[in-house]
Length: 226
Image 1 (cartoon, one colour):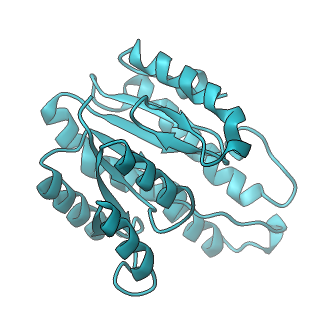
Image 2 (cartoon, rainbow, N blue to C red):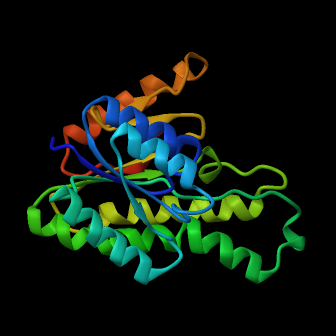
């Protein structure tokens, strides 16, 4: 597989760690984030020094996404792997969340991914290949007290990803869903690499997902993550 990667939400957490790991393994990475020249300038400089190309993308803005994806293609020449990592969490009693609160959460966790996919799919379709990875959550499979609104956004993401396997996107493109919260992607194997030894238990899960994704033209999220 070619090694040109775009990852969203690279300004912190697993987005930063994933970017560093991919760079260490020889991938060309466009790391996207908001506020790359202000709030996130330190991490942007750190990733740039490590070899990443930094592109500003706000996934809540269609114009920002379209411009950022186009710039990433210009910088790398192609996009072989897209990792939909950007997301936010929340917790609290459901009745305390206004519809506007919910909309802001869904605008990142669900609509933001749709914006990215709509921007990258025509390019991948034209080149005849590509892998889209969805960073989901265990809370997209179960519910927990005080996480109802976050649950709803991740359940929506699960449905969006699974629907792609029913003819919702172009053929000849692979997709995989990572429904784990304490892990980091290693796209070299389309698998999961752990950020530290304490997360080693998740490695086998994503290795299995990678194996299934490589042996099928499409990969059902329900079979790709457990």
